[in-house]
Image (cartoon, rainbow, N blue to C red; front, side, top):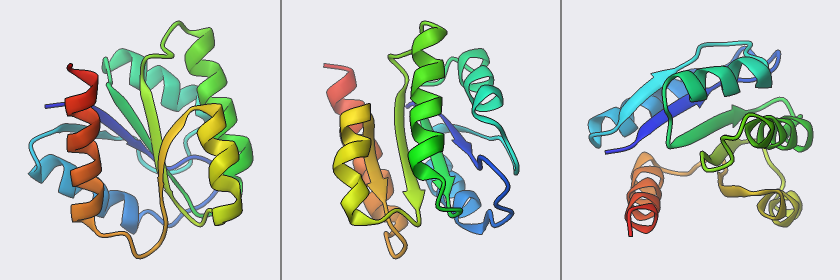
Length: 131
Protein backbone atom coordinates (compact mmCIF):
# COMPACT_ATOMS: atom_id res chain seq x y z
CA UNK A 1 0.00 0.00 0.00
CA UNK A 2 1.25 3.45 -0.93
CA UNK A 3 0.38 6.83 0.51
CA UNK A 4 -0.64 9.03 -2.40
CA UNK A 5 -1.48 12.74 -2.47
CA UNK A 6 -3.82 13.67 -5.34
CA UNK A 7 -3.85 17.40 -6.02
CA UNK A 8 -5.46 20.03 -8.23
CA UNK A 9 -2.94 22.84 -8.65
CA UNK A 10 -3.64 26.28 -9.97
CA UNK A 11 -6.86 27.99 -10.89
CA UNK A 12 -8.52 25.11 -12.71
CA UNK A 13 -11.80 24.29 -10.98
CA UNK A 14 -12.57 20.98 -12.68
CA UNK A 15 -11.83 18.17 -10.25
CA UNK A 16 -14.15 15.33 -11.22
CA UNK A 17 -11.30 13.35 -12.79
CA UNK A 18 -9.04 13.86 -9.76
CA UNK A 19 -11.80 12.62 -7.48
CA UNK A 20 -12.43 9.56 -9.68
CA UNK A 21 -8.71 8.72 -9.66
CA UNK A 22 -8.48 9.25 -5.89
CA UNK A 23 -11.42 6.89 -5.34
CA UNK A 24 -9.96 4.25 -7.69
CA UNK A 25 -6.62 4.39 -5.87
CA UNK A 26 -8.41 4.02 -2.52
CA UNK A 27 -10.40 1.09 -3.88
CA UNK A 28 -7.10 -0.48 -4.98
CA UNK A 29 -5.95 -0.40 -1.36
CA UNK A 30 -3.85 2.75 -1.24
CA UNK A 31 -4.10 5.49 1.33
CA UNK A 32 -5.10 8.64 -0.56
CA UNK A 33 -5.23 12.28 0.48
CA UNK A 34 -7.09 14.57 -1.91
CA UNK A 35 -6.03 18.18 -1.40
CA UNK A 36 -9.00 19.88 -3.03
CA UNK A 37 -9.05 22.66 -5.58
CA UNK A 38 -6.75 25.61 -6.17
CA UNK A 39 -3.63 24.32 -4.44
CA UNK A 40 -0.24 25.93 -4.94
CA UNK A 41 2.80 23.74 -5.54
CA UNK A 42 4.03 24.87 -2.11
CA UNK A 43 0.81 23.65 -0.44
CA UNK A 44 0.95 20.35 -2.31
CA UNK A 45 4.57 19.71 -1.29
CA UNK A 46 3.77 20.60 2.32
CA UNK A 47 0.88 18.12 2.31
CA UNK A 48 3.03 15.42 0.70
CA UNK A 49 5.72 15.83 3.35
CA UNK A 50 3.26 16.01 6.26
CA UNK A 51 1.45 12.91 5.00
CA UNK A 52 4.71 11.01 4.36
CA UNK A 53 3.55 10.41 0.79
CA UNK A 54 5.15 7.95 -1.59
CA UNK A 55 3.57 9.55 -4.66
CA UNK A 56 2.00 12.85 -5.67
CA UNK A 57 -0.50 12.83 -8.53
CA UNK A 58 -1.34 16.16 -10.17
CA UNK A 59 -4.43 16.74 -12.24
CA UNK A 60 -3.67 19.59 -14.66
CA UNK A 61 -6.30 20.71 -17.13
CA UNK A 62 -5.22 24.34 -17.38
CA UNK A 63 -2.31 23.96 -19.79
CA UNK A 64 0.15 25.01 -17.06
CA UNK A 65 1.78 21.57 -16.81
CA UNK A 66 5.20 22.86 -17.97
CA UNK A 67 5.16 25.31 -15.04
CA UNK A 68 3.42 23.30 -12.31
CA UNK A 69 5.27 19.97 -12.61
CA UNK A 70 8.76 21.55 -12.66
CA UNK A 71 7.91 23.77 -9.69
CA UNK A 72 6.57 20.83 -7.68
CA UNK A 73 9.66 18.73 -8.41
CA UNK A 74 11.95 21.66 -7.56
CA UNK A 75 10.19 22.20 -4.23
CA UNK A 76 10.31 18.50 -3.35
CA UNK A 77 14.07 18.55 -3.95
CA UNK A 78 14.51 21.72 -1.90
CA UNK A 79 12.65 20.12 1.00
CA UNK A 80 14.72 16.91 0.85
CA UNK A 81 11.77 14.94 -0.48
CA UNK A 82 12.94 14.13 -4.00
CA UNK A 83 12.20 10.47 -3.25
CA UNK A 84 8.46 11.21 -3.50
CA UNK A 85 7.37 10.12 -6.97
CA UNK A 86 5.36 12.45 -9.19
CA UNK A 87 2.78 11.45 -11.79
CA UNK A 88 -0.08 13.29 -13.35
CA UNK A 89 -2.87 13.52 -15.79
CA UNK A 90 -4.92 15.96 -17.73
CA UNK A 91 -4.54 17.99 -20.87
CA UNK A 92 -0.86 17.42 -21.62
CA UNK A 93 0.27 17.34 -25.24
CA UNK A 94 2.28 14.25 -26.16
CA UNK A 95 5.14 16.45 -27.36
CA UNK A 96 5.68 17.57 -23.73
CA UNK A 97 5.96 14.01 -22.32
CA UNK A 98 9.71 13.66 -22.88
CA UNK A 99 10.50 17.01 -21.24
CA UNK A 100 8.35 16.11 -18.25
CA UNK A 101 10.00 12.69 -17.96
CA UNK A 102 13.40 14.38 -18.08
CA UNK A 103 12.31 16.58 -15.16
CA UNK A 104 11.39 13.49 -13.16
CA UNK A 105 7.67 13.04 -13.81
CA UNK A 106 7.20 9.26 -13.67
CA UNK A 107 4.03 9.04 -15.77
CA UNK A 108 1.44 11.18 -17.53
CA UNK A 109 -2.11 9.97 -18.16
CA UNK A 110 -4.16 11.73 -20.79
CA UNK A 111 -7.93 12.05 -21.08
CA UNK A 112 -9.42 8.66 -21.78
CA UNK A 113 -7.00 6.78 -19.53
CA UNK A 114 -8.94 4.24 -17.51
CA UNK A 115 -8.78 3.95 -13.76
CA UNK A 116 -7.49 0.41 -14.30
CA UNK A 117 -4.54 1.75 -16.31
CA UNK A 118 -3.76 4.18 -13.51
CA UNK A 119 -4.10 1.68 -10.66
CA UNK A 120 -2.07 -0.90 -12.61
CA UNK A 121 0.71 1.64 -13.16
CA UNK A 122 0.69 2.55 -9.45
CA UNK A 123 0.93 -1.15 -8.56
CA UNK A 124 3.94 -1.51 -10.88
CA UNK A 125 5.48 1.62 -9.37
CA UNK A 126 4.97 0.18 -5.90
CA UNK A 127 6.59 -3.12 -6.82
CA UNK A 128 9.60 -1.29 -8.33
CA UNK A 129 9.99 1.01 -5.33
CA UNK A 130 9.91 -1.82 -2.76
CA UNK A 131 12.54 -3.99 -4.43
